[in-house]
Amino acid sequence: MSLVRTTLDINPRVLAAARARVNEGQNKSLGEAVSDLALAGLAPAMPSPDPSTGDLVLLPSVPGHVITDEMVAEAMVDE
Image 1: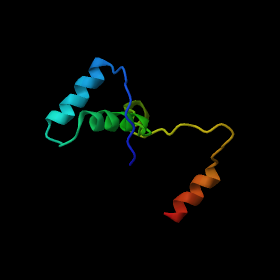
Image 2: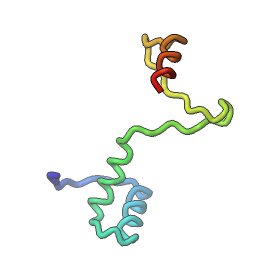
Image 3: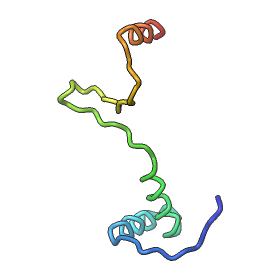
């Protein structure tokens, strides 16, 4: 991993969260903790189960991509 030194204005809540990670004994620098938080924010979030849907996770739709009953039936046979 290459490191870049720069000056940033960091939100106090983010700074506090980074300091908490450093203080948890993770043996990291403050910069590494801020980078970890930033990278976690870039990771795609997993959808949460929605109780109103019977605890099914609804995936985001893709415009123009239609899933048919036949496609579902074929996928179930493959399992």
